[in-house]
Length: 154
Image (tube, rainbow, N blue to C red; front, side, top):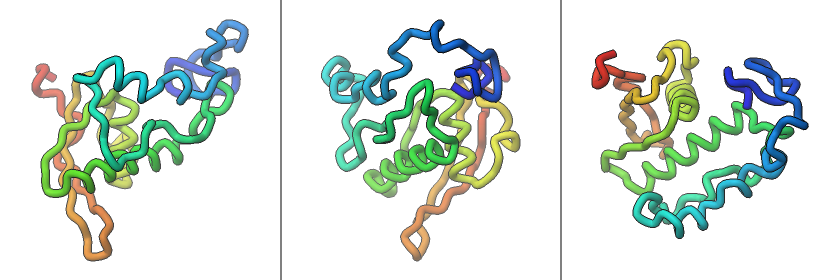
């Protein structure tokens, strides 16, 4: 809600939207709007359960239109998801698909660099990372390419 499309009256970017003009469901916790178990049952061939990874992928915090997730918390949650998948599939290649916001924040979280270094993530941009596990057991990341759009002529 704090991106360029706008948000609550105290958002930093975009058009401010008055609460009374919003669908009232935006005031419920985000996790109640997207129920992972229900989605898994509705689309079993599309959504695959990830054993050992926390479900749902939402924070336990009751984030909503009036209580937005902080960038720091979102980064931490995204790292948890990515590194949880790595630990479950150690030594394997993986493909993770998402939209620009999470892809951009994953870049920031894994590389420690600001997203402007990578440029905007387009609708079909591809980024590639290589990981290694350090002697301390921590996963170390190297970004091989970021936000590549050559496959769509760009």
